[in-house]
Image (cartoon, rainbow, N blue to C red):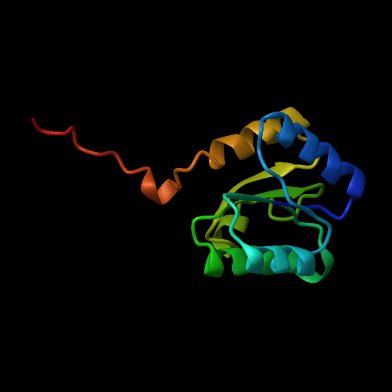
Length: 130
């Protein structure tokens, strides 16, 4: 899911994800994103931090409660959370990138985090014994 208030930017990101055969739900607001989360789960949520009233974190919180394996990639055009504190506020945050990140790069990030293996599942396994 993409949560991006700039419709043109959201559509640009969606096209690049769809080019990688990734199913995309595009929403423009936090309430629409919460409604989508209530309807089903997502492997990855790309959300612009510049939502009204800090609602990007609210969306991440709802995702973490309803879909704890959902990975969140935050996007920002500012320096907000540039100290890495976003990871303290959002347990399902996996990355924070600038909104100027090339769409192809963002698509590859989503593909990586949507690979079906959550970071909690990526624990090395001991070799199988014969």
